Image 1 (cartoon, rainbow, N blue to C red):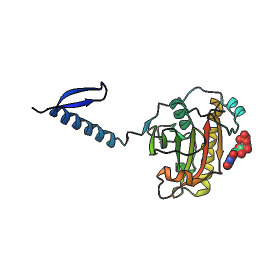
Image 2: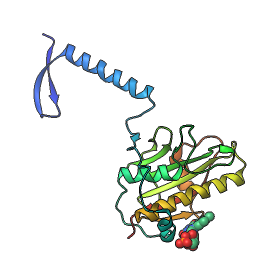
Image 3: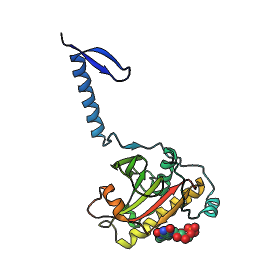
Image 4: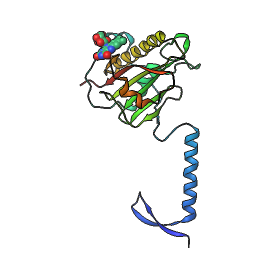
Length: 214
Ligand SMILES: Cc1cc2nc3c(=O)[nH]c(=O)nc-3n(C[C@H](O)[C@H](O)[C@H](O)COP(=O)(O)O)c2cc1C
């Protein structure tokens, strides 16, 4: 009584399973789902590896190598490289939450989104994770970085300057890692807007394509 056959995916065998077992397992699963939801981490979000904050190419050599590259191989960036790139771009580098790139009055109005093979994500710098905004992606490189600014938090002309600092951080990181990159003011914002779940005053200002050179 109370026993039925259940399909076990892992072993591909039919095993007798007690109803109470199933009930307990389902309870456990919903408990885990609740934990995930409470932590704000959905199944598709990506916990980034801890970024490397030491070493790398000397700054003078990176400046010597910095240049724009516009053709990319299909090879995706490993998670470690993605994490290091985003930290270099706009990651938290002090205990008070300030960033590797300055913003006027420390308003921190710039948000980076990334299109990678897994979809489109918002970079949460404080938590060092990627929060999925779409399963789709856009762009012509394995990594597209989309720069948005909250124009209610900062006069628009400062938003543009602040994006420039972030873009140069990415340029220097790419130079140090022998990655190709191009900062772009010419792009179709409508290709990206549906993927981002933007806030009321959040505007897309620039994109930056990144990949291994072809
Ligand atoms: C604000 C800004 C906007 C740019 N927009 C584009 C663009 O839309 N398309 C593009 O191919 N390159 C773009 N670039 C890259 C420049 O063309 C490039 O930096 C310039 O030719 C100098 O080359 P270098 O970066 O190798 O020194 C942009 C650069 C900046 C700073």
